[in-house]
Amino acid sequence: MSLIVQKFGGSSVANAERVMNVAKIVTDTYKQGNDVVVVVSAQGDTTDDLIAKAKEINPNGSKREMDMLLSSGEQISIALLAMAIQSLGYPAVSLLGWQAGFSTNSVYSAARIKTIHKERLKTELSERKIVVVAGFQGINSKDNITTLGRGGSDTSAVAIAAALHADKCQIFTDVDGVYTADPRKVKNAKKLKEITYDEMLELATLGAQVLNNRSVEMAKKYNVELEVISSLNPIPGTIVKEVTKMEKMLVRGVTKDTQVARISLIGLDDIPGVAFKIFSKLASKNINVDIILQSVGRNETKDIAFTVSKDNADLAIESLRELPFVGEDIEIKCDTNVAKVSVVGAGMETHPGTASTMFEALYNNDINIQMIATSEIKISVLIDIKDADKAVEAVHEAFLG
Ligand code: ADP
Ligand code: ASP
Ligand code: MG
Image (cartoon, rainbow, N blue to C red; front, side, top):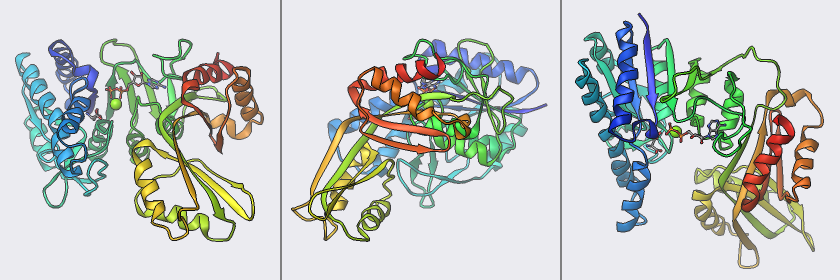
């Protein structure tokens, strides 16, 4: 007998028929003698709809209340799925994040799981129940509800699999695996049989939303093998693990991220310590900075530009204005009409010419590069948002077409 964790995303439980389909998959697994923990997301666009409802009433509602609101979406799904399983004649119990033992820190809307108190999960499993857990949520040390950030149900599933030493963690979604690019956007995208944690982590961080990047990070840390698989099409999916058997591909995937903003500070004094003070200020506000560019300006000045996520742009500018040397004479520009397009692949490390192939593909399509960032296994460029889809298509064609 094995313990299997199965996670179903929003589109997999979007309506009654889909919920019954999930109940069928889950009970088939249970019938084979396995213990099953199911993690579910809110139905369809519920989370987006809840955000819209909040904005109608107060666009600046506190993060605590936002988490209280958003966690309700998953509450609906778990109860409906437990009832669906019961209707098929199997025992099921639904648990909210706190009931399932999810203890998190207090960073509302981006909480981190501290630990999972396993007692309740274990008791329910020992009674041979199918345990249906609300993804994306937990509770902090003051008993307030927290959420893990968008797409966080993947992380809930991996965390349970790690805590209970599950034999399998399956992430069911609306595509049948991880592809070399978003299969809904790039028609030549190819499905990968296997991918390493490191490559998947880069793809997820750089915009491939099929897995949440924190879930991949956690899977790597606790060595939880993941399978990304379709809830509608029963064929083998993609395995995410430490080492893959696949032939070494130069590039494993192409991604785009349109949730970025570029902030530029123009006319800074060209003296030591300026960059340090800027980036430590941003770090103190928990703002992640990505691509950074410093260039020489006129008259002993320099310009510094960097990218942050769109959600953080206003806060970043506000905090920078608190710095004594960022006075009226320093111009701050913010451009949200940008996108980051990246290629990812462990093979790039030892293969010269990857960058030039990427830049040539962009040049051939008349796409201007605004910023560039590289690491051993990725190259990212910042371009105009209107060119993003064309760029992904062109770069994908150049490496994987
Ligand atoms: P869920 O609701 O199941 O969590 P998501 O919408 O979060 O599903 O993620 C699945 C979507 O990710 C797919 O519908 C697909 O459009 C998108 N996606 C983006 N990049 C990729 C990729 N490289 N491979 C597979 N899917 C991708
Ligand atoms: N319902 C949440 C969201 O839409 C969590 C998830 O789907 O993983 O982001
Ligand atoms: Mg998701």
